[in-house]
Length: 214
Image 1: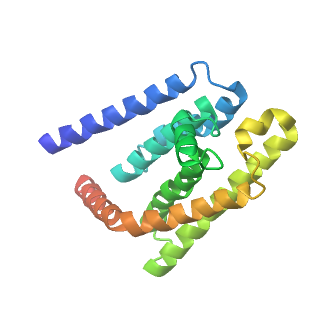
Image 2: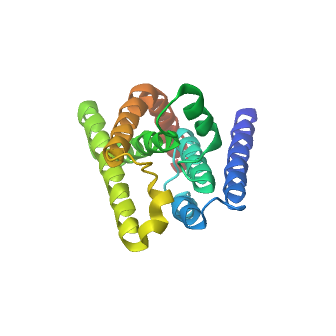
């Protein structure tokens, strides 16, 4: 009972923190269009998670990663990715060519979906080989990153100069390729560092479902 209460308390704290960051991000954002574009996945993702929670609850690890990814998007939406203050300080202090907060965002774009995709593939028994599982997860994450770049491209075509803050290229002609490269590394590192922890949570979750069904 104590362990269960601790988990519920931690979940409530995580949800509260995420919701708090979301509402903070909407208070006088640097660019209203950028904010709307950046937080729209947070809103859609939150709705989707609420709808599917009953019939397809995720592991605690997945929910924690999703929450942190949502907060990364909210911070980027509030300041724009090219103007996050902490990373401006890092740029100026170490003489970097640009604000690298968008690289953090695209790394998370591979890191977080890697665990989510892995969870779906394992639970739906899509693939049994661990080697193929690793490869397919990386491919799916890279596809997600490419799809997001298409969204950015489409937004630029529709909005023109108004989309510059959303694109966040900061004059880098290879920004798209670098973004996808970061997502690729995120997918690799997530599986290499979290696979065992994820497997333990999946096993525990499977056992709880079996107990409930009996």
